[in-house]
Length: 173
Image (cartoon, rainbow, N blue to C red; front, top):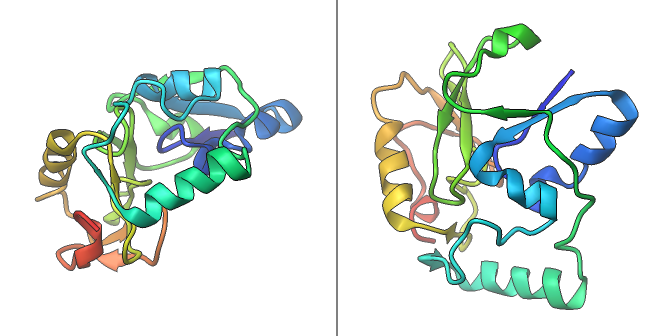
């Protein structure tokens, strides 16, 4: 019934239009990333040059955009624009939304009462992977995670890890 996007990048939002159209699922995203899915542009509402981007990420971006032309995806209009006040219990989910800009302006995390945090691409757990649009926002978002009762962090890429055990690759690659 609900597809909740942590941000608007094609590798996270690429099938949302299909699920919306074929299954009637409501698609939700933070308003600061809505233009990405509406225009099919992962650079929408981002700096031309991110504050931090690892060599591996630069190489992957080049391959996707220039060689594979895979950065584009089917555009769509989100059904819901979410923020920290969004009540997910209407959809049977006991969790809260945290606005966690840094990777993108509209990045969000989903925090369950048990302390599981699904953080999209704010954090990675893969050596050499890093893409931070705005470093100040990233640092504020990481500080925001403190004292939230987080037990396990599920990044958008890489294995889950325990809170307080940030692998080195999670910060600046």
